[in-house]
Length: 214
Image (cartoon, rainbow, N blue to C red; front, side):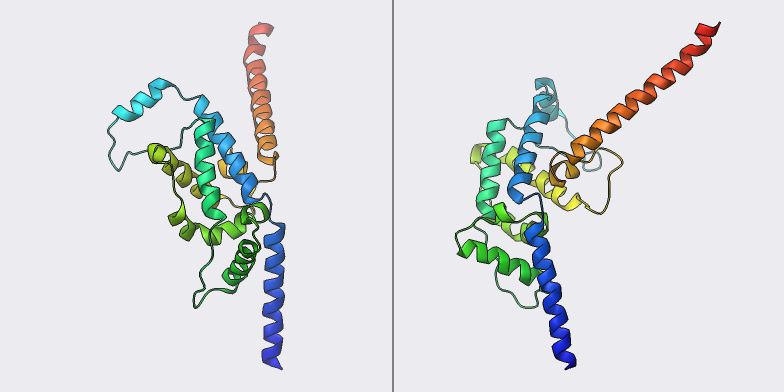
């Protein structure tokens, strides 16, 4: 019947989406580890003067820059543990009028939890996008590090949503650094830097050529 055919099409689409979720890489675990390392490395370049300046500057809503997390390796580990703890305890609530995709994610995610498995080890960005809004409420940050911990989570969430796997970035992309397969964005950055250096050498040679000729 027509209805049966439609049901089969829906089942096939859901099965294909479930396969996408299972094969989505990097895993949430790997992405969070990459993000931790990136934040800690970036923080090493931040000076005490910059920290003091941040405390003293008074900015308006119009001029307020986007804030980034600056934390030591030990601090980022605390934030990452809090995030992973919330992710691996999160259970999708059964709601009415859920999209078929949300139902598929919920079945797989909740199934892992029920089997005492950690979703962060088996699922990637696509699944996390469906859980992110609600699970943030369950994240418990260390009280004494709450400000930087909040920035850690905000920045991770921003990069989670900014990443577009259908596009190859023409400039350095922090979202791609976290969510691309390991080393892909780093290799793109290395090639861009090598190309810029080559172009700079070429411009220098062209500038010096008339002087040498004369």
